[in-house]
Length: 77
Image 1 (tube, one colour):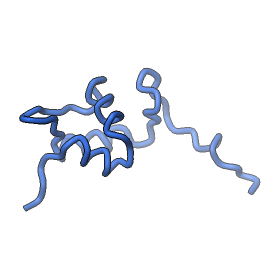
Image 2 (tube, helix red, strand yellow):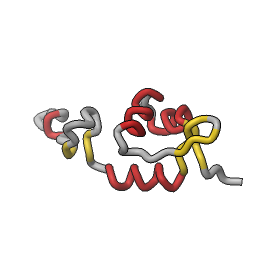
Image 3 (cartoon, rainbow, N blue to C red):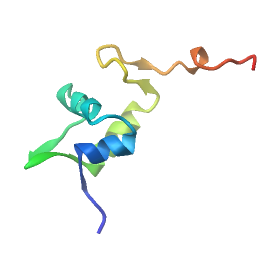
């Protein structure tokens, strides 16, 4: 049976970030969650969050911007 809910640690592992960052996403209202025993994130909520934030830099949640790869890539080789 396919999983419908994930723990914070499972989401962190999938996103390759720390659990603390996932908690910050939840605390700041970016990633809705539910609590029964421990905090859980619905699979559908996680997919929606990823689709809505694709292309965004969430490093500073108070100043979300579009990702600017031109400053990270040396075009001249």
